[in-house]
Image (cartoon, rainbow, N blue to C red; front, top):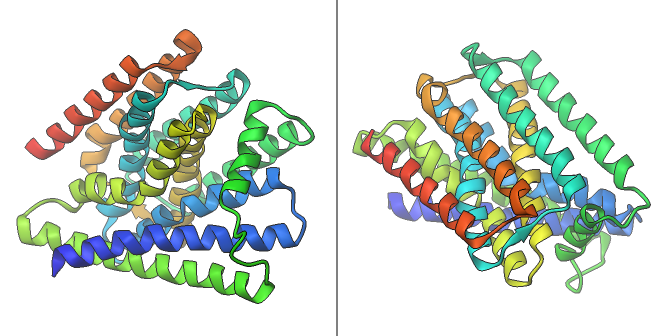
Length: 318
């Protein structure tokens, strides 16, 4: 029963997030919002909905280990696991200008997570500051890419086209139903996932933090995994790479920020001692790999996967 609830929760998170994004993008298209803005804002928020709902519900339930572990673990898995798999399929080349901007913001977000966590609690003021930083990043990105045809701008437009509601429907009422249904499914999936994770931790004597860093983090990152793998198979490395950078920025600035705004989060000591440093190291390693040779090759993808295996092994032993 516990395994069923866990799997069902993950399935609803993925399904709900997809339906929510398609409904929201369909509505935005009907309102003639530019594909670039849709790709930067709606697709980014939508694909991060599983992480958002999971961390929010976990925080409201008093499971700080799952709430924070989900964000830190997702960012680590995005780089070491998902980009590692994508790079093994097809070497990942990134637009240098986008890498410089988004890579810098991703690194600053990781450092902000480390700095705020050092205080022991991420309060509402910190949440507001994180959300403000996300808003500034989105505005700067949109203004920089509006009216251009750079690889980064085309990537955001392609993201918008990839999740359109066509040819299913263009009806306003149907699109509203899709968006609301997706939101409802995501909330239910998050509720089941958090409940099953807490029970799993209690049954097997595992800390909630470990569950949040592994099962929950990887589960809520499934949309990013699917997107990056499909992009690599289609020989679209810029989408695979940009998807992960954008997701990691949203996870810290958006998800951690919004969750802390709703309810201040106590950061588990274990995460501050080890896991947040792994996330930061993975972020720096990604930038080094991307800058050397202007791409992440298959060998480097294998190294990323090996590093993730070592990380999970360390968590298992602890």
